[in-house]
Length: 519
Image (cartoon, rainbow, N blue to C red; front, side, top):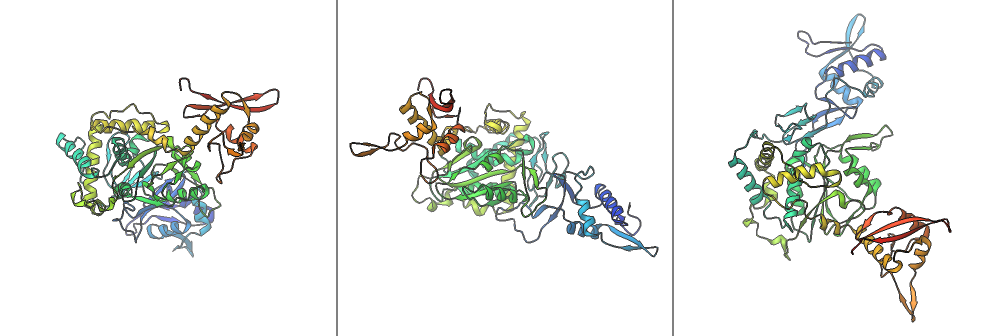
């Protein structure tokens, strides 16, 4: 039983009797707010607290404040500091601490109607679904977010003046990003779109695509561009291991325990291919579920409300990543980009400039002014369409267009060229059609065609190197080839598409390639 605070004892009093009584009393105490800074996330209780030993000047967490799952030991600590747990011995109250098994039983409860839900910790203002800004530090009931600013940001006007808007646009375009060597307007617009994404996310309640910052050479500014987001909102760097989806899943799960709104794979090896079914699924899923590391319990489920980025030189895409990615290309067209005279830049030495809290506040204020001006003009949308990200694309495209920033998502064609899998299949199907026209062939016959012919004593490859191969460069077996082909039936690659049917005479599946009319 829990009794309210009285007189000189400000702590709630909780009677800890039998195990069953203690479980009921503690559950009631938690569900009626007896403990501060306790929230519920995905059915489990979490405790919001500051952590010692963090710094905020390197683009890490926006504030050393985290929401950690509440453990029996953590619950015991909170009860000892904020309540008076007692039992009755010899007709006298005696302070006690509930048994670990009792605490575990309480924490196994999954429905907490009186505990506020926590969807994330933020270090900068964001836009609520109603178009107003979260600006007051602390818990925001409308969004389920806890705002823990690293530095005080002066109130953003709900209706910025034209002078405020002009000043903000000039700062962002003519100072903040003016010296990045964007290949085209699309790359600059896409970069700005991702820069605004953490602010818009709660307002849109929609998924954000993968951000790829790919440069032609080192020292182009790709890491610095990504670090702007980290400095403003907080970021966490991840390790990319190509071809190891199991490790990638663990890495993603671990990263999502962090409050960082931006999660970054920085400086991938030159020419890396980003191709992962796990990552592709993550980007199009509003929730992420995985078994917690080192645990045999029910697992870990959380809202996927982050911005995911990667940087590297000449990065390629594979699998389904091209349709889930926003591309930002940088090309300094300079043999020594690291030797550029930064004193002539809009903001000299931007990397160190951003470490000053007042400078980060300045950038955030200008971005928020642009957002609020868009909101006050009825938040116009564009007509962009982008798979599961259309809501984000139309809102971001409309915001940028409202401020006269052109080119957003205009490089989707260039993005498809970075899709190595698509390019390989396009070449394979085009050669297949040249060799077989639209005649159906079995996987076995097709595999036989891959064999090298001898003409006048010289080897001739009729496929000219376009036939499908495995990771070791070997042509697959007929059985493996059949399975691979089945997975691409009806999918267009370039101007060709693979079709399939059953050959009733041979009782076997056959395949053929059709070419788009007029090509």
